[in-house]
Length: 159
Image (cartoon, rainbow, N blue to C red; front, side, top):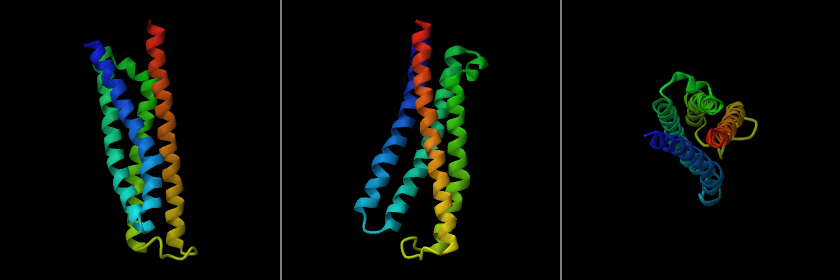
């Protein structure tokens, strides 16, 4: 059973990192390159980002639950890899439930991001929030890579 729970830890973290990398480096740039309007591309990316965030939080919970079931101690939550996953969940929740929510509201107010003049204060706020969103997502990726490395290191140290 220990091996199965360790597998779930890797699976949860791997799915989360894979989806984040795919969205950030394939879906988002592709949508803005292929679709006819920036508004359509933004809608696709926003939709995908919400699903990725919710899936990521679920993957983090799977990771933490599998870790608890594998070790049968709450002390396993104080390891560096678990702390990285907690950070990933927190950054994702902040991004989804504060930044993305505000960006969606601004999108509705603005109407068309593409047709809005660059001096518009609503567009400036949207751009600021987009920068925060990118920074939070970068933090999730970095914490995820660190968690994966630390998880692998835990195994090699144990052997």
